[in-house]
Length: 144
Image 1: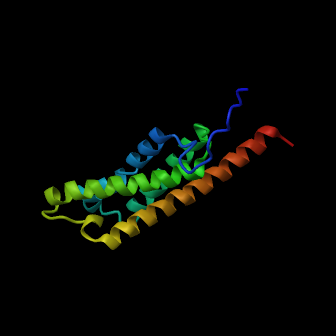
Image 2: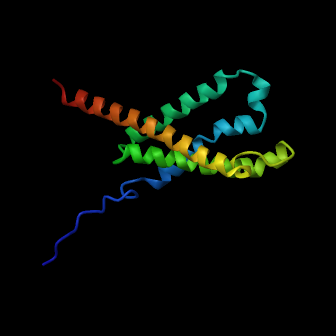
């Protein structure tokens, strides 16, 4: 008798890893504006960083809703963590070139933990919004 087993519901199943990596990379726009000095040249503080965070969050939510990702909350938490790792590496590579010395989370282990936690929280909040948007859209499709 051949019984099929249900797929694992572990923390890594049902997560589209290519989307996670892509969304994490998309969020690099924000630190790139800082590392390259564009944010300072434009001098729209605090509006530019806040605005970019909102734009990236909307893009993340839209991506998981449109793609109908099975686990949007977990997917965006992982996207936030991916962004933290990517931006840490980016800072480690670019800050010595652009700023003349190492800067960023790799120079302070507590800052690394803080960056991972903050970006995971960002993904969690964006994921909660995505879950709410998806539920609202499904309710609308079903009708009254």
